[in-house]
Each structure stands twice: as C-alpha cells, then as structure tokens.
Image (cartoon, rainbow, N blue to C red; front, side, top):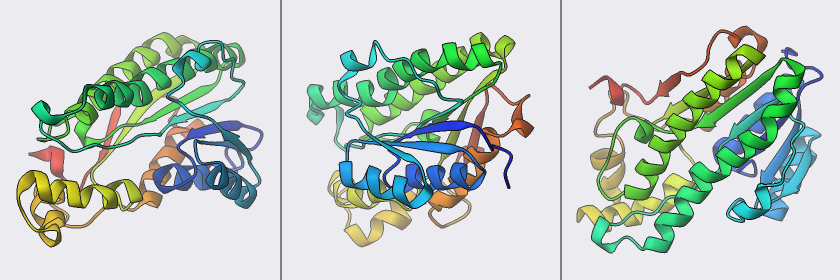
Length: 248
C-alpha cells in the first residue's frame, strides 16, 4: 500500500511498542517517518530500519517545544508512561510530569504542526489514547486524567482543523502487549493485593470480552488507516480497540 507516498509523518515514543509499530506501518504506506524518542539508540535503530529520520527529544522539556515549527503531514502523539498507586500515595511531581507528557506535549506539537497542515490543505493528527480515555480504573489517577484530557484536545483540534483538511482522532486500545504494560504487572499486584500471575486475568482482562492482549501491530493498522486519504471524513472520533471492554 502506497497511499502515503510523498507524505511526512512524526511519531512520538516511536522507538518501541505501539510507536514503533506505527512508524513501521506509516513507512510501509510510503510516508517518510521521523521517529521521536528520548532513547537515542532506539530512535536511531528504528529510523535506520524503516529509512526514516531519528529525533532524540525529551517531551518533558515543554518550554523547548513552545517555539517549534513542524513541517509534517501526519502527527502521531503516542509517547506515554504509567504509574500505579492510590491517590493518597501518588507523588504530585509524577502526576504533573505525566500530564505534561501526555497532554501538554501533544498540545504543543499540534500547535507546531497545524500551520503547515492547514497551509497544505491536508493533515492527520492521531492521538494514541486508551480505553482509559473513556473509562476509569483504580490506582491510575494521572494516566486516566491525562487520557481524558487528550480526548478533549483531539476533539478541539478536529473542530478547528476541519475546514482546512486536517483531521484529528483518538485510538483507544485496551491493554497492549508492550514493555509499558509488562512493567506495571508488579505494581498492579501490589496495589490489588494479588499474585503477579493473576494480574493479567483478574485485572488487565477482567472487563474484556476477548481475553487476550492487543498487539501493537493491530493498533498501528488503525493508525495507518486514520492517516490515509480514505479517512478524510473521519474526525473528532475515538476508536476503541479494547476487546469489548467499553461495551459494558
């Protein structure tokens, strides 16, 4: 498929997990992809693999993002982190950092990219949200708050960009087979007071009708379609890929 030939794309958190899968998908469709990651080696390795461009960037340095001008046709806001703790135990600094990474940084990148997109009459903003952008879970106060904020940002972008050929949408997967999910299993076990071996079945998949983790490539396939010309009338939407979690 070459429906993105001649287009440029930028994927944050592109060095691993969902971001890497998205970068590969967009490159396979013909786009030149800039792989943004705080991990120098990961960004360069993936960029070399797909013939893209690495960009080592700390998205928590939000002041440095305020003066950016991005000439990209497709922006995938994917970078994220997780921290599991009860509200009374949740470090305030961690809460602020997570909102900066998953709400403020996407806002600043969209702000930097919109002039180019609107000027060209084509733009695609895809925000990797979560089922937690639509539903809440215990012990994830910053993540749930951030993803709900990202949903609002995406919808406002859709309204302001629509007349200029710019779409903005969220993808909302359940638990995806990524290092981010693997790292939280021990934290989830402690928070819920259960063995680690029981976390996947009793916590991660308890609300899903389909009892398996989502694969990164499945999320990337949806991102690729939303970035394509075929999705020009799809905007302001939130696409769940959660195995039926949000059907409840």
